[in-house]
Each structure stands twice: as structure tokens, then as C-alpha cells.
Image (cartoon, rainbow over all chains, first blue to last red; front, side, top):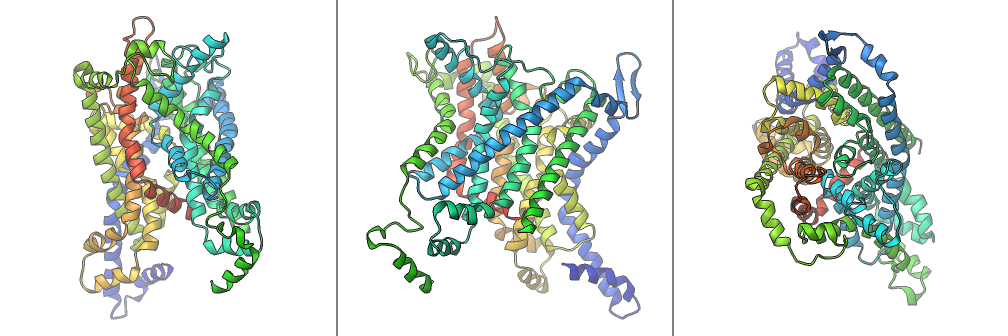
Length: 316
Length: 303
């Protein structure tokens, strides 16, 4: 690839040579054709990604006021954001959630993948498909199911409380986040498991044979062969999980209509806050600033994980 | 291979030879622990199936994992399809429209772009790739408000286009196609076709695209699921129930059902319509599961 690039770059210098003109025309034609292939994607990408982000940046410099309409306020929205207790509350909540839920989910997924790959299970295929199935379930349906099941109005906890005479409510303010954790872990562990599992399937069989000759036990094989082979998969799963939990929206948006007094506020997660500010609060400028800050935080963390992960891979 | 065979045989006592590294002794403890997790994964689905067979009064009164006094599954299905003038059918067709057009278009555009990025030279290619890959980690919400305002200005909100156009762009799909095309399509073959006088687009359609089939199926599946399950985008873009996909429709029924006091009693519809919504996806998952695995391997290897 680099050869061709150098070739194209040198072409204009060789105008004097007899073949130079033709060469240049050919190089130019090549360029046009490549763009023709990416143009449909690129055009829509601009419409759906680039322009909205730029527009967001523009909007974030304005404020909507009850009196006097929209006015330019510079960076005031961003300054307001840093001191907004509601934003900080939501941000702290998703941070906490990410720090606890993501490691638990990925550890479960990793152990599950290693177990399914060990060939020591009865019915491994059935269990592999079953654990991946929740990924097929839309967030609305999974929230409904768990909402009904954990709810005290219709669900299992109503029955449990009736039988045991207790008053356990998984959706009281202090435990709602844990219940959401149970739902999210349910939905995505299988997906992450399959990423690890595919990574394990890519390990060359000779390595296992060599390990068997050396008399390595199962745990030695896991530590010396399988875990190092999963480094790339681990980076991918960590990055996607962080992006996912930072964006949390569906569960806290749907739950309040099912359970009363769950402690879910309009600013429970930053995304929910953005949504409520923009679509019910009419504060689009402030919402745009918030959304951009969240995007920047997410990207920064995702990149930090990626760079660290890759650096480790190089160190090996 | 032949050299490794003899020491392995020596290392194992003859009585245990039927256990090999490809077929080790099964572990009951490990099976039990994995089965526990499988139970957690299947539990809500079992709950859904059981409760879709209950009538509304049974749903409210009976134990969650017991059947009701009456097997009402078919009554429930009939009611789902006829309630509110059969709007569920409309939502179902809308979802099919969004998924069908969205998944096919986005996959084709990703294949076209991914192939060009892997196999054709053009200026600005690296910048293009960098921007698109960077966008994978941009949270959807950062785009939602300006997308909504932009689409409102273009008069596209509350039309199917508002859901379709964003679904045409799949940066992760483009990334998968790029990775796959770089390895699966031999450059020599493309050059040979060029010498024979084939145009670039014809080369793509007739030579490259058939070689990209495994990646295409994977990207198609991912788009299928993500569009089928999409909630946030249609939630903000659509106000007219006639254009709702299933996810938003079910949510609307759920809201109706949960409204305190004078709420309509239609939890049986909420549960049954949820079941009907996930059946096509579960069928697709089980029948096409080997493509999932290969696709996920593809995404992780590149890092």
C-alpha cells in the first residue's frame, strides 16, 4: 500500500517524462473510483454523524429562555454543567455502575467461555446458545419481563412477600440500580461470552498438543495459552461495555411506567437527563452541551482502554 | 504430527486413552455451575412463555411460574392482532420495513465502502477511515438531538425516513468489511480482472462481493438485530403510532396498562406481543448462530 502512495505522490514530479501525463491521469482516475465506492456511505455518514455533531457544537453555545427566546451565551452551558448537581449525580451513578457491573459481567462471560471451550461440559452447545439468546431480546421486552418478575405488584416478589410475610422490593430507591444491573448482565453476558469463545476457537490446536506433551494441567493451559489469546477480545468487550453502560437509557426510561417509587429521577443517568432536557424541558442548547461532554468522556475512556490494551499486547 | 503422537501415547496409561485433549473427561461440577447460569438466562423467557398463556385475570392473580386456570394463548394472540383496529400488524410490518430496507442497504454500503478502503487507492483514504472508526465510540445520544432537529428541518421526522436514514450508516459494519476484505479478497485476482478490461464496479459485484459473503451475513445479522431492537431513535423521531415499530408500540401498550387507576387492563397483550416480537429474532439466532461466532471472531482479531 505504501508503495502505491509513494508512487502517486511522485507522479506530478515526472511531468517531463513521456509517460508522466498518462501516469498522472491514471492515478487521478484511481482516486475518483475509490471515492465513488465510499461516497454513498460517506454522504449518509456526513448527514447522520458529522453534521449533527457540528450542529450540536453550535447549539451548545445557545440558551433557550422563557422570555426573550434563544440567545448566544458562549460557553455558559458548559460552565453551568460542571456545577449542575443533577448532571453530576447521574454521571456518578453511571461511573459506579460501570465500575461494578462491567467487571462482574465480563468475569462471568470469561468463565463461561472457558467452561464452554473446555469440552468438559454435558450439553455445551445447548448452554452456549441459551446464554447468548438474551442478546436477541429488545431492551423494552427485557425491561418488561424483569420489571414484572421483580416487581411487587404482579411478580415473583409479590408471591415471595406473601408467602414469607416480608416486604422486599427490588425496585426501591436503594436497590433499583442493582436490579438494573441484573437486567443488563442478563442481556449482555452471552454476547461477551461469544466474543471470548470465538477468540478461544482461534487458538491453534498445536499449542494444546504441545502443552499436553509438557504435561500442563487445565489451569496451566488457561493461564499460559487461553488468557493471553483473549487479550484482543478483552479490549473489545471492555470498550463496548463502557460505551454501553455510559449510554444507559432504555431501562431507566421504561421502568418508571411499571414500578412506582423506584427512585428513578428524570436525571437518573446523563442520557435520560439529556432526553428529558431536550424533549420535555425545551432546553436544547444545554442538552446539546451535556450530550457532547458525555460523548467526549466516553470516547476518552474508550481510547484510554484501547491504547493501554494495545500497549500491553505490544509489550508481550 | 507423527513425532508428537508417540510421546502423547506414552504419557497416558492405556486404560484412560479414550480421554484425549479433544475429548477430556466431562465434569459434573462444571456442568452444574454453567447450567445455573443458563437457568438465569432462560428464566425470563420461560416466564414470558408461561404468562403469554394466561388471561388477564389469571395474570394478575396467579403465581408467575404457574399456568393460569385457563390456557388463553390463542385468545391472547387473536386479541393482540385485533386490538385497536389491528395496529399490532401495522407495527409488525413497519418493523419489517425498517429492518429489511435498513439492514440490506447498510450492509451493501458497508461492503462497498469496506472493499474500497481495503483494495483501492485514493487520496484521503486514511482520514476517511480514521473518522469513521472514531465514530464507533460516539454514543448515539450525542447525535440524537441534533439528528432530530436536522430531520425536523428537512421535514423528515414522523416519516419512515427518520428511522431508515440513520440505520443506513453502520460504521462497525464498514470496519468488519474492511478487515475481512483485506484478507479474503486476493489483490492479484482483481488485477487480472482489470487487465481483462473489467470495470471497477463490475469487479466488485462479480468477484469481490461473492468472496465477502461470510462477512456480509454477519453484518446483516448485526444490523437486523440492532434495527429490530432499536428503541431510542424511533422514540424521538416518531409521534404517529401508525409508523411505530414493535418496540415503541409495546411500550405504548405497557404505558396504557400501567397507568394508575383507570389504566386499561391489557398486561396479557403486553406479554403476548413481547413474545411475538422476540420469536423471529430467536429463530434467526438459533438457525444462523455459526455466523455470529465467526463474525465476532473477526471483530476481535483485528485489535
